[in-house]
Image 1 (spheres, rainbow, N blue to C red):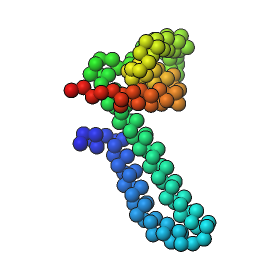
Image 2 (cartoon, rainbow, N blue to C red):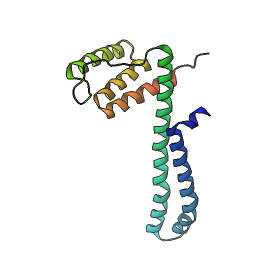
Image 3 (cartoon, helix red, strand yellow):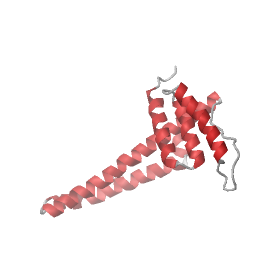
Image 4 (tube, rainbow, N blue to C red):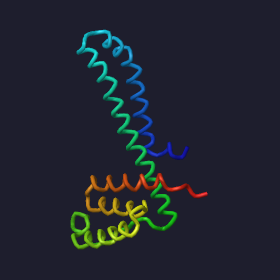
Length: 154
């Protein structure tokens, strides 16, 4: 139950509650729309489909966040959390030289162990450090997939 104390979990639960309320309130309206002509039937389908698409994306985001927390906790126990101590510019981001050094290290780690989620987690952290959120999320998603396939230790 400790997971339900975090702000992210509370936000996810409140979003789920709002979505359930939406479905309960709209159910009668959708049934009425399905009895109408083609346009109203299409609207009825959209009233159901769009929120379901939102649920799928919310679930995927929650699952990635949950897996990321598990990976970070594992790395913390192992003493292998990524730390980028390179030189930073006035904006707080790593300088070009520091970025090159960080990426050289994480690239070498992925080349040596392409199926190791830890290496991909470090790649994601490196992308996040330079502000490339899209690539960070992609690398983190790959790391999470590898992490989920790893056997659970006894």
